Length: 80
Image (cartoon, rainbow, N blue to C red; front, side, top):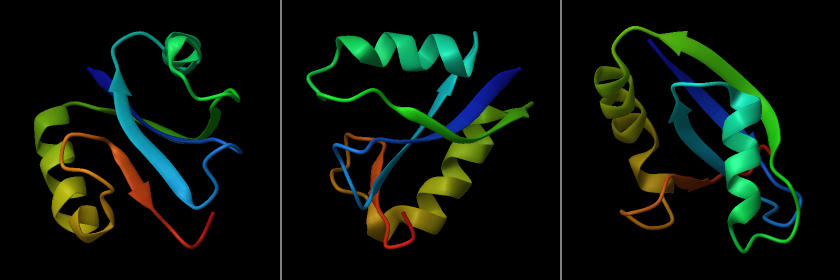
């Protein structure tokens, strides 16, 4: 079972990161500390899911127009 998480970052206003982890959201945010983003990520939402591949597919369908780049899990949003 995986955890789908939505993360925000004050250095990237107007964007969210959707991703997954098999450990914990805290651990995933810690791993992202090694990226060049100057501020730490914050937890916005997370949920345990049985079929991550299916959930990811649905999320990409729903938010596809908001993706910044096809190879990234970052989305533009005007609600954050």
